[in-house]
Image 1 (cartoon, helix red, strand yellow):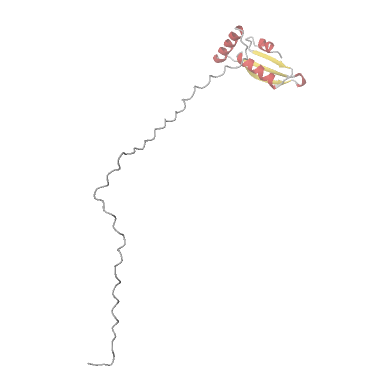
Image 2: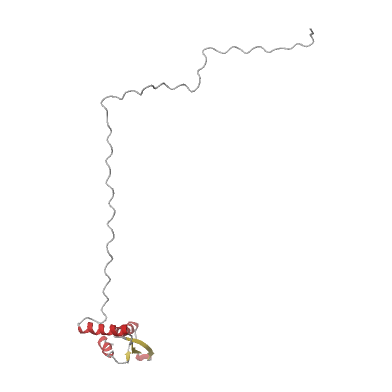
Length: 153
C-alpha cells in the first residue's frame, strides 16, 4: 500500500482500519511507524487469509502522542518526509591528544683531564690474606718416650 494512502487514513478519527494486501513484515512495520508518528497505537491485527491483514489503530490521547502528531503534521507541511531517518547523533568529542614522548636527555660527556689525578693519600698496599711460609722448615718432632717395664729403682 502506498505510504501517502496510509498516512491519509490517520486524519484524527478515533479508530482507523488499514488493510495491507501483501501483509509483509516490512509493509506492516511501515504502517505501524506511520501510525505512531501520527499519534495512534495498534489495537488489533486480523488475518484475512490470501487477502492480506487488517490493522486496527486507535487514537492515543496521551499528551506526548498528541505533541508527536502535531510535530509530524508540521514536518509534512514543511515538505520533510514523515519517516525520514532520524538525525544521526553527533560524533563523540575527540579524545585527548596522545602523550608526547619525553625528549631524550643528552648523555653526559666524558671529561678527559689534562693531567692524571693525584694518587690517594695514605693508601697502604693490601695485606696478604694468608701468612707467608717460614723461610726454613720446622724442627722435627721430639722422639716418642718409651717406658721400660720391669726395671725398678
